[in-house]
Image (cartoon, rainbow, N blue to C red; front, top):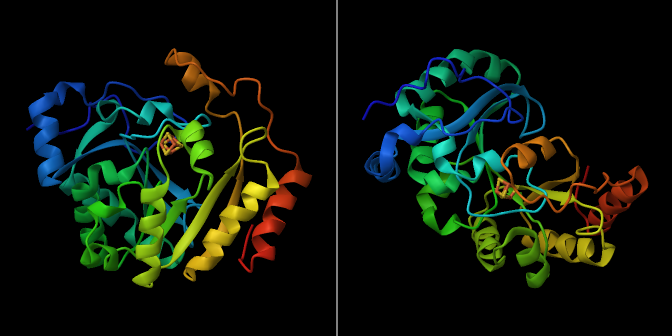
Amino acid sequence: MTAAPPPEVPLIGSPYDLRVSLGERVGEAGIKEALETGDTGFVHSFTTGSAVDGPGVRLVAWLAGCQFRCVYCHNPDTWKMTNGMPVTLARATEVMSQYRVQLATMKGGLTISGGEPLMQHRFVLKVFGAAKEMGVHTALDTNGYLGDRLSEADLASIDLVLLDLKAMTPELHRRLTGMDNQPIHEFARRLAAAKRPIWVRFVLVPGWTDDMAEVERIAAFAAGLGNVERVDVLPFHQLGRFKWEKLGLDYLLRDTEPPSQATTRDAIERFRAAGLKAY
Ligand code: SF4
């Protein structure tokens, strides 16, 4: 399979770039082969210099493909795997090696995010394997739904999991994402049993996830795990609205404002009250 990215699309970019149809020419057989071997991934972009996607300064690979349909998603162009550009494992490793020294100096590492990276778990594990060989810290930013694709040995190769906890009440979680949350909780418990650290990410959306009783339920679950090192409360924003519009998607949150500072502080306090470090 030919897997070089189209020359006009730079590999280094931002998750806020709208990127579509970059992998379509690979075809169904090529996608199947890529998913089976993990030798090629479908990547929206790489971002350098992130300070919010794990410890230190991070190189972030944003992968394409997600089975969730979160009402607040700011990257709906990552839902379709074929919107990502095909990138070989060798090319991804080369990008990493370019930044290896800076990442070590800044006490950072590689974060693989998305989309949902575990849609392409074999590629993720191979890239993480290459990172470990270079001595680069690895973080997986995931919605957790496909955690059962990872063996215990795979878990050991991931230094940190950034786990999205979107809602505890099953019905609310389904309305928010289109999916059940039970598999996510099972994955979180497996990580706890394996003593692998988690940073929880919670998106605070007015009218959807700002019921403080619900926030307390998430906090209680996270605190009960025993391996949650920190919680980041992420205030909803509208930076992704243009993508919904350009893609012709029905955006339920088009008129939703970001939460107030007071509400954000309140949510952070609920996590702290459960004994967690929250920001
Ligand atoms: S899990 Fe992430 S990428 Fe997938 S729909 Fe939700 S917010 Fe978007």
